[in-house]
View 1 (tube, rainbow, N blue to C red):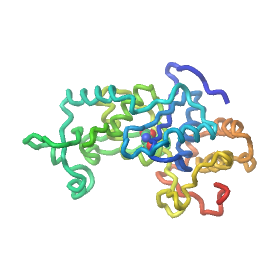
View 2: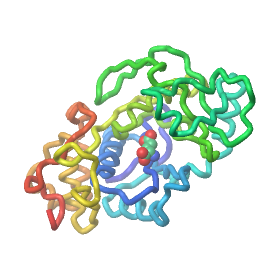
View 3: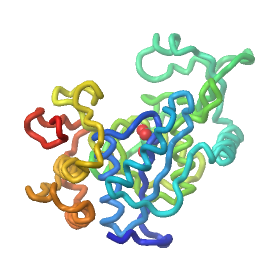
View 4: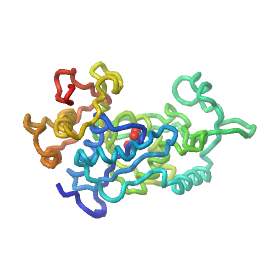
Length: 309
Ligand code: GLU
C-alpha cells in the first residue's frame, strides 16, 4: 500500500507512541495495528513517536528494536520518528504556562504517604504554607468539574476531576510526567485522532483538562481494549505475551485483525504482508472493535499465535 505523503490540511493525523521500556508484544501489535488501520482507512497520516522520557525505565536498544519490528510487520510511517526526549523546550514552556496560571504547586509527599489515602491524591500539599526545599514533584490544581469523553470505541463516559485529583506534571526526579508530555506533543504534531490502549482511559480526563488550560485542541479518542491472558491477568512474557516474530508476521497480524473484530478469512494469514494490510485497511471499522477495556486472548489451542502456540 502507498501511504499518503505530505500533510493534508484538516485531514486525519494519527500516531503510535510506544515507550521503549521493552520489546513490542502481541498487545502492542494490537494497539499499533488499530491505530494504523484507523489512520490509513481515513487516508490519514500516521506518525511514530518514541515516548522516551522515562529514562530510568528505558531498556537499552528497545527503541531500535521497536522500529525494526514495526518495519518487519509492514508498518510505514510518515515523516521522521519523533523522540519525546527532544521536546524538552516545549514541555518546559507548557510548565511555565501552567505556573503563570497559578495552577502548579510543589509536592513532596512520598509514595507511601500517598498510598495511605484511598483513590485520588487528597491534596495534602495544596494548602501547605511552609516552603518545600527538598526534592519535590509539581502538581496541577484541578477544579471539581465534570469531564465528558466521547470515545469512538468505549462510548460516552463522564468523570469528575475530583476523582482524578491534583495530578503530577513533573516528577520528583525532574522528568515531565506523561499526561503533560502527551498533550503537548500530540498538539505539536497536529494529531487529530488518538487510538491507544484502554489502560490510558483513566489518564484521559487529566489530559482533557490540560488541553483546556493550555488552549490546545482536543483530538478524537478511540481506546482499544487491552489484551490480557485468557484468565484476565496482564500479558506476561512467562505465559502468553507472545513475542512478535517477523517470520510469522502474517499469522500474528491475522490474529490481531481477528481480535480487532475484522473477521479475516481463513487464508489471509498466509498472504503477503502488503495484502494483509490492504485487506485490513479495506475492512477496518472501529465500530467492530470489542467495546470493552480488556480483551482476554482465546485459550491456548484456539489461535495460531506462534510456532510454539
Ligand atoms: N507511551 C505510552 C505507552 O507506551 C502511550 C502514549 C499514548 O498513546 O498516549 O503506554
